[in-house]
Image (tube, each protein chain N blue to C red):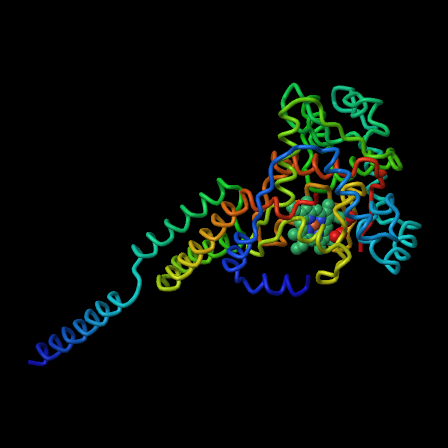
Length: 108
Length: 286
């Protein structure tokens, strides 16, 4: 009897844990989310590199994202990856825009 | 200027980029380096009518009388003296094979700073003095110097010193690749980059004489004549490579590798438009 009570309560505790785990997985980011977000950011930053126009802020956001992921904080890691991707895309936009726009500043 | 920097620093980058796009004007292309140089020099002499043409080579010191006095005082006990001595020694010291720097350069390397960079038609590339120094080392079986400081700064300091007063005499040979390199350098100079969305010209054409943090911005005219420089903030000497990469980082742009093609072309352009202004290096900065 004692045993089964214990067993039941252990089971209950486990299912609560599992359930809360499931809920938080549903609400929060997983490692897979991070990997996808990070890879998208990296791709954009590599493209900026080909345009010879990476931003230091993109590089540090990527670094911070990696660190957060290593610490198991995938919410933060995903947010930072998305931030890095946005910065990388802005740098690509800048390069494209400056292809001709640089002439506006030239001393004539 | 201050307001611009503050605005940019808040990181509203995309909005600025969009504004820039709307403002862009597309002038017809015409490559005319002599006309560029004339317009460039006129821009600065018009903007600063009290500064003599040859004084633009003193960078921030040309922009402010108080600073100019400080500079005069500094020149009595110049902080680059140590590097200059080291450079003189390195320059004279034979390589392991018995040759020395003198064997790699015209006129044994004395009084020739004003001719660099030049366009090498054999290789189709701009050769800066820093590149020529490392090529000299490597072709004689020696290890190349780091481009940014220490030995490279010392040797370029010595070579500049033996050339003081000689006007920049950069040539663009009749070779479409040379003209393309020049144009590429010009483009690099005027192109906005980094999260702050600044070009070299934003600071050194539109705002020379303005203060940015504790520093006074140098005018782009004559901006390489005093290189290499001693800077208190660096606690030592820095080369052109060091200055270019650190100016890139300031606007939150990832610097290229020292002496990548863009930097070589940029140096070619900036030196060419300062033709006629005297070499004054090595320099000392606050």
